[in-house]
Length: 351
Image (cartoon, rainbow, N blue to C red; front, side, top):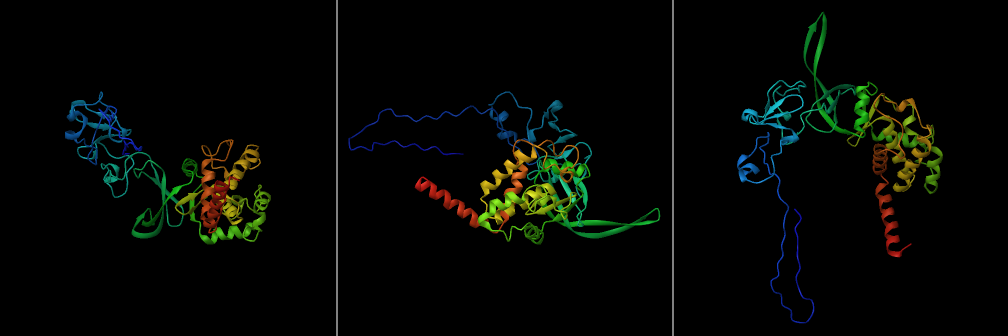
């Protein structure tokens, strides 16, 4: 809570006196105050009802879900099933079960960490990089896990065929650069794999594009000449980068289009082009080429519900990928200091 400070004084040399001075602060009315135990049961003794104040009762409470007070059951009517906060359990089986967790357990038995019991919000990939399944992990935002280790726990035979049961472990957690597009691409069957975007892979792409050997004094001109469709810096279109694969780097998974943006940002830093100029250049390219269909390619089409018509400027996810790639370049601290010195000079000299 922000603290308020008041100064009352007389800086002059003359004697001063104050009479009947008052400082009054009137807070707004508290409409409702409700305290919960971790699994959602109300702490009745210190909440609005017991304290005798508040507006007409708000029915949407724990997790923003409507509470049902019929017959004093005090249950919550979630989208798929009813929840009882007194026992921290569902009244019916979980239709989206999670391994090793009871079918009646709520919030993965960890309500402090997980708040949303809906949604298929985790995407799991096997150690070989292939897509495994969606999993409801209780989080509101989509995320992913790339398991690194596979262990055969048992075998069984069915119809004369021998099968192995595997357990995956050592998962690498990640987020999606463009979750809405990326998850839909998985559901469309367009993206089926994930791979680590190693330093070797990134450096190889920089070498092939020529940015490591280009004259940095002409960096912007080099980028302008080679960033056109099919150019050396049109990274996403390089044949070794695959449409069906996410590229995982620094905790973020990029589809091939966004990974191309990431590499372009990295390349712009290698050419020592200022970051603001690079991002504005991307907006300009989208305005001139994207909206006219010059950059349209089947490689970036991930099926229904993914990319639609280009907007006026570069998308937030594209800009995010460019900035991440730029900041990943070892030259970034030097470029950041150069930018700071430039603006400091403008600030103090006025030109």
